[in-house]
Structures are given as structure tokens and as C-alpha cells.
Amino acid sequence: GAAELGPYRHYMQKEIFEQPVAIANTLDAVTSITPELFGDGAYRVFKDIDNVLILACGTSYYSGSTAKYWLESIAKIPTSVEIASEYRYRDSVPNPRTLVVTISQSGETADTLAALKHARSLGMLHTMTVCNVATSAMVRECALSFITRAGAEIGVASTKAFTTQLVGLFLLTLALAQTRGHLTEEQEAEHLKALRHLPVAVQAVLALEPQVIAWSEEFARKENALFLGRGLHYPIALEGALKLKEISYIHAEAYPAGELKHGPLALVTAQMPVVTVAPNDTLLEKLKSNMQEVRARGGELFVFADGDTRIESEPGLHVIRMPEHYGALSPILHVVPLQLLAYHTACARGTDVDKPRNLAKSVTVE
Ligand code: AGP
Image 1 (cartoon, rainbow, N blue to C red):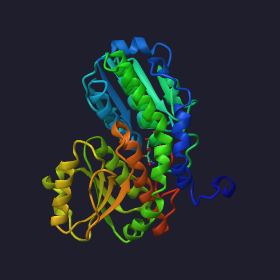
Image 2: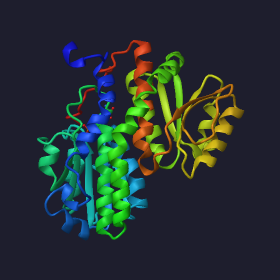
Image 3: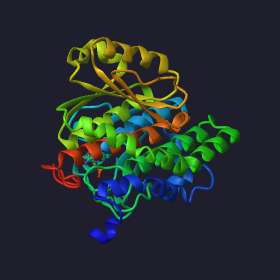
Image 4: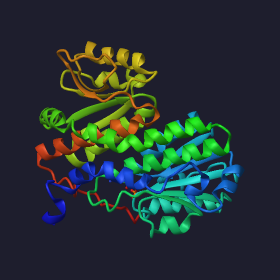
């Protein structure tokens, strides 16, 4: 009801703005990095595994896709990420030394539960979930768990569940890195400091809302949009596109920017807005040349650029300046303006933001 919404128009907007608190709550009990954050006996499991298999659907699949980059670069553990509805029905090669990690806001998604049971039936008994509902079937079914403290998420479009999943998955990365001898005490302290500062950093990004609203008026008149990202931020581009299509009904696709010339560049015209996630990471120069490819075809760029990228607005190139680059945790900041862009575009189009057509909050049937 209106009372719970407070100053917000929709649950989705409220939940976007609850992210600093949701992240702080998720980190509340974390005083140091230890496998026991994931349950009793986690250390023994972490010592036994030689790879990670992440299973999830939708937005949770994109947090898993982001975590793959962290797990391989920081914990140096081979990781695969699979869409639960695919994994459960395909022939795969089971490895009993796999840590199977399901990710789910609700903990009741039928395909993710079935994928978990499928993995177990193949002899993979090291199971863990990153889940937002402590009493859910998923938590009951998994040997280990990390509960995100996003609080109830009502809007069908997942927002605060996603960013808190990323926090949980980053902690998992650090705990696995530690067990495998890839995390010094100094590194642990630095990562913890960056995690603890996240609520303040996310708050600063939320302050960009007025600039995003200005863009959303233009987006509301489009029927297509392209999202580009590279590396760690490619899954963020995917998540931005999913948010936009889910609630504004604008057709949106995301590509890793390096793939542009292998096909999607053919779609780029002056009518095509191209949203670009541009953190100041090692791929920035590559990304800038991808942006040139778009400009050369008349495409209009809407860039979320870190403060230190030296990407400036010019005709056909709009820039919203993000705070300084946030290192490995940058995806948690960069997804926020994409959530806001989808939200305000949907509002401008007058769709039912919290209950988009044809969709259910949790998909408990196949
Ligand atoms: C996200 O905005 C979606 N509504 C949807 O993709 C969702 O993330 C997916 O159904 C998975 O749900 P779960 O996290 O509860 O398992």
C-alpha cells in the first residue's frame, strides 16, 4: 500500500533506493573473510573442490555471470555458469569435485531447483546457494548457503536482490581465494574496506537519478536499444537490457562490445540508442574504439563513464559521469543507473512497472 511506498511511486523505485541499506545489511555479520560465512563445514568443501558451477535464471544468472570473472581472476578457480532450464535437460560431464552454486532471490524458482537436483543426481554433492529467502526450498536443499539481506523484494524486476547477490558472490570469491592461497591479509583488508564503503558509493550513484530521468524521456520514444559492455561489465549490459525489456517493453539486446562488428553493427542507425557501460578498467581503450564504430554509423551513444575516463559529451554522444572507478566491485555501481534508466523509461511509457505483463515474481512452475 501507499504507506509502505513512502515517497516512492513504485516498489521498484523504492527497492532501487534501498540498495545501500540492503548491501549494508548483507555485510552486517561479516567481520572477516572465512569459509564459515557459507555454513559449517564449508572449509572442508572448499578444500575438496576444483571448479565452480553456477546455476540460475534471469537476473540471478547475470549475477552468476559476473561472479565468473571474479572467481577466475581472484580465486583462480575454473567456473562455468549455466541457465538452469538448459542445464537440467542437457547431457553434461559431471565432476564430483564441483562446487554447485545456485543463485536465487526467491529460492523457489522451479528450473533452478530442478537443475540443483539434476546436478546432485549426477553425483555432485557439494551444493551451495546464494539466496534472499532463508526459509525457501533452495536453502533447505543446499548443504551450504549465504543469505542475502535485501529484505522483501516486491517489484517483479529484480534490483536489490541482484546487487546483494553480487556482494555474496564477491565474499565467496574471497573465501575461495583465501582457501586456495590467493588472498594475503593485506588484500583481504583492502577488499573488506571497499565492500564496507559500497553503501556510500551506491548512494552517490543514486544521486544521478535526475540525469537518468532526462535520458529516459528520449528512450521512451524508441522501440529498440543496444547495450554494450566488456569483461566484468558485459553481464551488467545484459542485466540493463533485461531490465529495459521487462518493464518498458522496448526491445533491447546486449553485446560484448568486441562482438559489434561480427553482426549487431548492422542494426546501428541514427534511430538506435546504444547504451555503453564504460568503467575505467583495462578494456577502456578497446571500448572507446567500439564507440567510434557506433558513431561512424550514426548511432547515438549514451555512456555511463567513470569520472576518470576522459570521455566527453559531443553531438551524438551523451555522457553521465559515474564516480571514480571502483575496481573489481565496479559492476555493483554500474548496474544502478541501468536500473534507473529502465525504471524511468517504463514510467514515461506508462507501463505497469511493478507487475509487467505476462511475468510473475517467481516462476515456480516450469
Ligand atoms: C528479473 O528482473 C526477473 N524478473 C527474473 O529474471 C528473475 O531474476 C528470475 O525469474 C529468477 O528468479 P529467482 O532469483 O527468484 O530465482
